[in-house]
Image (tube, rainbow, N blue to C red):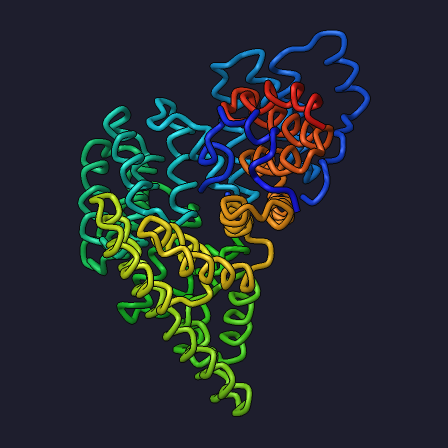
Length: 473
């Protein structure tokens, strides 16, 4: 193992350790091969539009790293390209690299698509306060935006702020009384808040205006089911299913209605289709259990009831975890890391399999100086999800700080293998290779980082220092 007190380390002293290894593939990425016609066009006339087309081709063919490089090439030609930033953000979000989206997008975007991208990255990372902040700022720029309002309403509902969601949706609906999308957002919020009288009146009006809208048919059918108007609910829900057969919620509600109308076989079919299409709500299993019992399928009914009870507990645990993690975020922003760590512990106890919560607990423990606790938490996260690149990266940072460079290298390799677009992990890997006197490999790793993000300060600084490192080999 190489010591951190080598001449090369002194050469790299201008780079702080924090810049190299802090806070998310075991080999250098394979070269990107473009379709011949696109490659020919770009060779003869390189332009931002051509690179955007190439990026979308790579994305459609599941070559995430290549897509990001192509989007970056479009940005190199046109740094202000919103289309390139938006495309790159969507690819990174799909790949689960939310940290990269947060780092690459402006902190306060002025384009609606970029605002939505940034908010979605925060939400997927379960940083709900930040997601709400971005959307709230966006609505100051675009106060009549359907998409931004819908995103903030949906987020508010997710964190159990249904009254705030309804008030926001109502404000938009009053601003735009003739906008069907604005009214749709308000109707959904009313249904979620169980303001059924208001929702029913609005739902009827909207269905008159758009009688073949699958969403309006579904929402009216659900309200009619709740009110006990099963025959009318069946009519609307069957129409909704015919128009949108892959929307599981319509099938779930139709299944419940058919059970009430003494059609257990039809109910079973719809409820099982709802589950096949992705329904996760415990209530679906409960309703299916009742139907199976009525059909004499007692054993299968018992199994569905077990799933229902387990799902209820998971929902309760999830609600506790969301509450505690939100409180932890607030404590961290207020500078009370000890309180934040305690709250994250409670969140992790509620959802022990949530590696994102474990990672944030680890960072909070780091801030309090509990490095042993941080390491144990990260190791548990990686054990739960062996491809969790943020935890692999942070473990590498710990090993690097302790002088265990070869161990750190392996952690960084795991991080870039799990998330090939993870720029700082490539930089950190390059730093490890440099300290181990493997300068050519280090240059390849830092080159990969610069292909992904040409203006990354850490990568640029390290790339300038590496040529001189040959003198110390």
